[in-house]
Image (cartoon, rainbow, N blue to C red; front, side):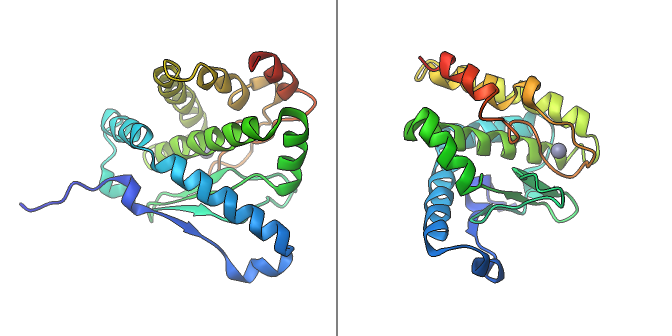
Length: 209
Ligand SMILES: [Zn+2]
């Protein structure tokens, strides 16, 4: 059989909902375009892609199950106003990863600086992608997905920590249970995204020293 080895990286794309653009200022759109392209590049990095391939194999999730990974330019909110990091349409094999809002990023940057913000954005997206990929198998089992996602993220960051000791610390931010909000829905990702600037991140600033 001439089956090509499919990898997630060539199913990834940056996508924007044009009809939503009107709700944002030009400056915001510029910011979100930069954000998405930065996150996209980071998710494409071979070390992370290799890790994802290993994870899928380990979970016996066929790579063909993943049809598309959309890195969305614009953020998404729930009806209650809370942001969403990602979601998974398991039936279609389609995953979406969303950015934090400009407002959040601004506050974060003021407090911790640009580099830490970039670092946070990338790791949040990585955690979201890990989480949503697991939903392809454990479709409605939010608890199981969270538990596994935490473990896998930790494995990846531990591996990376040889090159960058900060990688390990981000684990504490993304999965800081203290500031995590419980979600009633099963189809979307929550950990880390509701980090309060006055809570976890203050602790994180100590970690980053
Ligand atoms: Zn979930």
